[in-house]
Structures are given as structure tokens and as C-alpha cells.
Amino acid sequence: MDIIDAIILGIIQGLTEFLPVSSSGHLELGKAILGDNSVPEESLLFTVVLHFATALSTIVVFRKDILEIIKGILKFEWNDDMQFLAKIVVSMLPAVIVGLFFEAQLEALFGGNILLVGCMLIITALLLFLADKAKDTNKKVTFSNAFVIGISQAIAMLPGISRSGATISTSVLLGNDKTKAARFSFLMVVPLIFGKIAKDVLSGDISTESQNFTALSIGFIAAFVAGLFACTWMIALVKKSKLSYFAIYCVIVGIIAIGFALNNN
Image (spheres, helix red, strand yellow):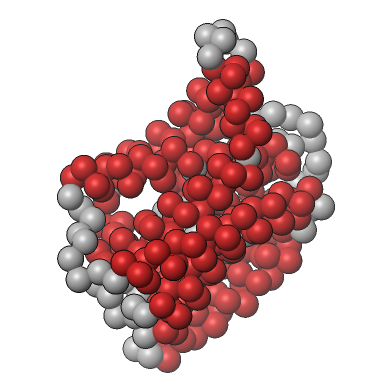
């Protein structure tokens, strides 16, 4: 992978990690268009690096919220901040289970399966359309909500299902406030990303042989900068209830992806 490809894929990751259009699906589409024939394991390394970059951009955007949560936790009381952390942990359980027991099967899907990506993008569009019709409320995410949202996050590990789209839509359909749903969606993925990277490094799953570290670094920077912009933008868009526009986009891209896959079989 050359530097130009890394920049393009980094920007795609940074934008689509937060916008509800599936970052993993767009990365697979980008790799197919750019002619990246990496085996699933190599593609996964680059994907993990880009996800790490967007996790850092999430921390920067929500730095004040995170600091407040840390201060609340250090009081060692069952306050709102401690409860929020507990809900994050609950939301992580489904994805952790999938990651532990179905990791090999999941990684195999990240090998240019464009037909799968197209179908999953259309499912994402349906979720966004339904969520956009939900009424505005002031309800906060509950513990039971957190677990259901976590199931959506686990399903969104499939390429083409938007993680933010699935989790925000699920939260909104459960009757939660859209802004609170977006905040919870963006923060709940951060520990999962860092946990996944730590697991891969310690287990040796990530191979550093034959890797273009310059391209990886450039891709990381591109994803981080694009992520800062997209995260801030997405928060504003969710407040204005504009998810249906992304639903239309996902349908269009999904149909194109399906047509591309069928035409190249």
C-alpha cells in the first residue's frame, strides 16, 4: 500500500467512523477500488491502526466529558459518573463475547466481500430511517438499554453495518435522547478499541513483517484529523435529526456495491 492510498483510506476511516455509513464497509470498498489485494490479516492490521486513530480523536472531542467522568469515579460513590462507566462495561459484553469466540470467522469477512458490504449497508439504511422517525425525548440510557445497544455494536462488527448508526439508532428506538445516544455511542467503543489492540499486541496476532510503516503512519494521521472533524459534525447532525439523509446515502452505496460485486463474479 502506497502513501496516497493510505491517506485516502485514512480519510475514509476518519469520516465514516462517526458518520453512520459504516467505516469498515467503506474501507473494504476503498480497498477494492484502489486494488488492495491484502490478505484478511494484513487488511485487519491497517484497519486496527485507523480505528486506533479515531479512538484518539474521540478522546480529544470528549475530553471534558471524560475528565468529568474520571473525577466522578474517583469519588468512589454510586453517582451518575460511576453508573455511566458501569453502563459502558455492560455495553461491551456482547462485543467481547463475539471477539473472543468468533474472531477468526470475523477477520475472514474483511477480505473484499463487497456483496456482503452492500447488503449490510442497506440494513444500516433501514435502521437509520426507523430511528429518524422516532420522537425526541429526554430519557437517559438505562442498564438494560446499554446491553441491547451493546448487541447492536457486536452485530456492527460485520463490514457494512455502521457501528455508530446501529448503536445510535438502537438507542433512539429504545426511546433515549438523541444527543445522549450519540455521546454514549461514541464513548462506548473507545475501551473496546484499546482492548482489542492490547490483545492483538500481546498475543502476537498483529504481524509487523512486510509492512509499510510510513503508509501506516500517514494513514493514522489522516484518520485522526478527519475523525476530529467528523465526530464534531456528527454530534450537530444528530441533534438536528438528519439521519434519513445518511439512510439514502447507504442505500445508494449499498446498491452500487452489490452491482459491483455481481458484475465482477
